[in-house]
Image 1 (cartoon, rainbow, N blue to C red):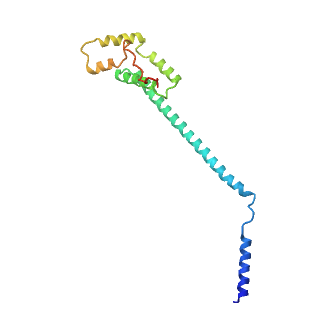
Image 2: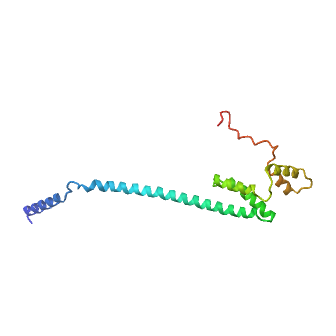
Image 3: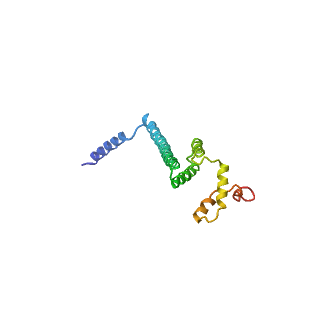
Length: 167
């Protein structure tokens, strides 16, 4: 091969490579970038919706379990067995303190508590506890049970020490 032939081949290769150079971007190129951003936004929204759904399901499951326990406690409070009755009343007392207990639930539990088999008012119950505290010959378990009730003469618990500035 001669030099002019080599030069001719090189010129054709250069011309072919110049024709392969990218031209102006088409109108769709910016839209493909926006499409990627839109896909990220849709994925983020789907993630947030999924988390909220999962939280709502977890709360519904917890509330359902709360009601299952409340049903057990209500059945136990109607038992003739004094041990089951005491378990039921203690469970109802615990359930009223739960963060899952709303105003309607507390109203229901209060109505059940007031209609319990004792038929006693708060003043009668307090008098009964005071009388029991003065009994002699109680076992340690009985004394602990009686002392677990708050006495009307007991001073209220002081608030936690908040410091000089109140915080």
